[in-house]
Length: 262
Ligand SMILES: Nc1ncnc2c1ncn2[C@@H]1O[C@H](COP(=O)(O)OP(=O)(O)OP(=O)(O)O)[C@@H](O)[C@H]1O
Image (cartoon, rainbow, N blue to C red; front, top):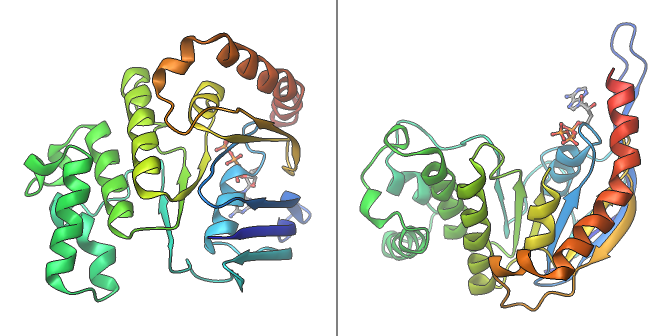
């Protein structure tokens, strides 16, 4: 897996009285194979726009995005899976069929699909709900179902846009631990967009801190956690130091973002 962005910006065209609007960048970075990279930044700075550009869901206005030596433009590359904050499941399909959806689109053999889905549902604790419909699940279980769907695709790069944003704090912490387990088990590279500094510090190898809009990276923080970390690190002194380091950098940018929104 190799992903790199070089001088990427994204602008929205002028609309009525509003002049051309730069939502992102310029942004340049590369992800290392197998790393867990999180992005934090003030509200509206362009985090989701960045993820959409990486995923091929939105085009860069300037600059280039390359995934495994091919330019990304116009569609999600094979090997990339995305989990969004909103529950993106199809309400008319069972949990099993939701998880199988992407694999069916790829035309994988039925036995292979069944084996992958069974494993993903077991991993996310949803085996007993394979025949349930999304509406019969709690918010946390629905997000686990979305993670199972992504897992079935065996992504080399997993993109997550605030996947736990709508969940309560306890569920969110537990889901974070599950995500770490998934990352370790699959060896995928992970890029996570989050509003939560604690979540970024707990989960990541590296945290990119963005400026207010148009978002650029103003600092990169290496956490130095071992690969077999778990939620227990939140009580270590290093956790407190890292969250303070990220917040110190973010605070001024968050104030600028609030002032411009006001
Ligand atoms: N389709 C669009 N047309 C015009 N402006 C847009 C469009 N999509 C996003 N924007 C604007 O681009 C900026 C960046 O939006 P984006 O959603 O990427 O930020 P974000 O950092 O993810 O925000 P949040 O933290 O609130 O989720 C915002 O000011 C947003 O209003």
